[in-house]
Length: 189
Length: 185
Image (cartoon, rainbow over the protein chains, first blue to last red):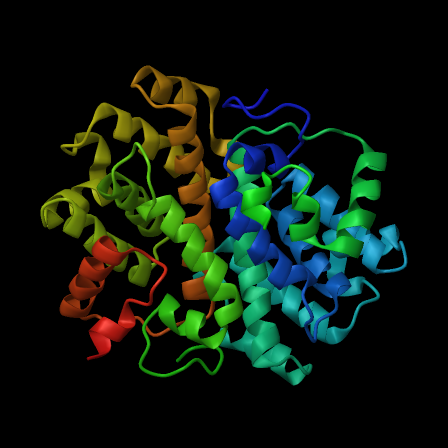
């Protein structure tokens, strides 16, 4: 049971968002820009960064839902998502994404853990300033979303099909669009 | 030196915001709702939570700018802000705020560190569900802002006058409009 009285039937962050639509609006807009809007990093790559950080923060709901969105964006390759969570250095992803995941992992530990060498290496693999910026901010933002979801003790069902189905929908329609299901119309307008 | 080419002359998070206005917009709006919007917790209390978490995360820019905003909200009591950062249990703040700071400190360590005892204790001191929610989200959000500011290695000047002017601006106008235009003049 959640620590506070959240609306029923909405797992993970959705219950918290429905509880406080005023903060849900910027939270959804931020994740939309970072993970779904046009970018030189693909949605699949960005979802892998979000999934990896959520896994490092041990947030079940976030790593399952973003892992599902990542898989939906990567030809349903669920094995790749698992590999990235547990051993991304040996996963079938680009050297650039590996270098960005190193940065994301350091941000997860704390902002000061990011080193000039990390950034130099990402740049040597072709990462732009904007891609490095967005990687830092995705990792930082998931240190927020993960704490929000676990810190309120939200319900996090063990239901693979639920995450898979919802992952496909978010991958297709984006975060702001699907949030209309559980937020009042005046907030998402 | 910042890790990427951020606009020069803008300290801390304001340089990240100027570099990427698309993400700045919701980040400003979130801070505004949490710290400056209507709430049963006073702006000073909420700024103290933000300052405490930023201090635990060792983010110089954030703890100094929000510490200045807190002081501006609390009759310029910089001594109280220092006391909250270093030993809030002995500070002259309400028992409810102390209980909320315990929760915020647990969130800073990780969401799973929040215990039902700390929630129960906050409730006993009069905290509502909304106040507990906002405390958790303020603490979580500053785990983002702090990592953003330090993870880009932004410029964080040691200039008390700049922070105090920024704090006044934030306390008066909130977070939607940039504070640095005021400071830069």
